[in-house]
Image 1 (cartoon, rainbow, N blue to C red):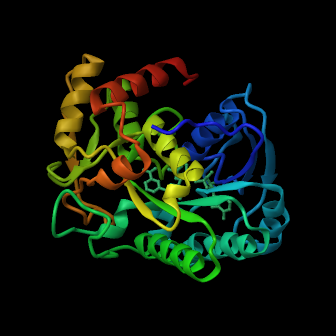
Image 2: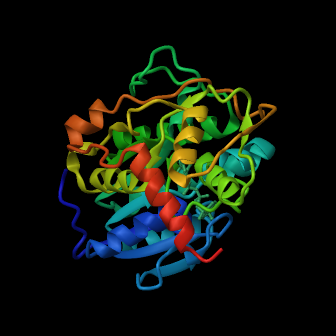
Length: 318
Ligand SMILES: NC(=O)c1ccc[n+]([C@@H]2O[C@H](COP(=O)([O-])OP(=O)(O)OC[C@H]3O[C@@H](n4cnc5c(N)ncnc54)[C@H](O)[C@@H]3O)[C@@H](O)[C@H]2O)c1
């Protein structure tokens, strides 16, 4: 693992009020750095960031070039996490296009002028669609099944183009199903684990779309944050794409069994129809590139991550 030290630096975290962003903001500040959060609070909430963590907040959209251009000269690093999520994107691909593609282009265009030390762009394992080979390597041919995966891949492609054409030091991380504290189950767009925990803790059956045999690679938030920050700090990351996952394949039914065990409850899920976004059958990432290149590896296995997430759920005001 590389040493995470942001002393004497300032980082722009777009989407810093969201689930992953808030965790990133806290980690950078605790590692000695200063942070500017740019967020339009579409799904984010400043309450996600611990009150003891000091940062500057700008309410605005990455889709607004003037806002981006004003902030970029002030920072050394950019963690670009702002995005419209898959659900809103499926309902309104144009809104997704404006933020996910337009906002990413704005960050890169501004970087051309201001030359930050490094930008990390958060992409998604959803760009793989239904892959041919598991575990999925970064070289797998993308298969974009949803407008969201189209926009996340387009953002990646702009990053490579700006790296090659203008020498902007930019790195892409492809996250897979991040879960953990600060993921808000009352946000209709949130991940499956926080929805299941919320249902189970309220004595309700978790709702499984389809047969529950679909698999995912669940990544604990703390691991996602250290992976993201390792990429942000490492010149060895420039111009590269990294899978950021656990490397472990888990079915939805196995996930429910683990949650039942940890919560000490009998859990019988309800099976409901697949949604139009549920077209990915299996997913598990090969994480050798980030292991060898950035010396990063996941520290928290699914059982421990779920235990910590349940602990957080019980500790927060309901
Ligand atoms: N959570 C996951 O499992 C996962 C998986 C793959 C990729 N990602 C990517 O990670 C990033 C963060 O995701 P998250 O799970 O924290 O989601 P989130 O919805 O909690 O956070 C996204 C944040 O971006 C903000 N935002 C949205 N549009 C904006 C705009 N136009 N301008 C400024 N801010 C805007 C939202 O208000 C929110 O605070 C996103 O880029 C997402 O595509 C997440």
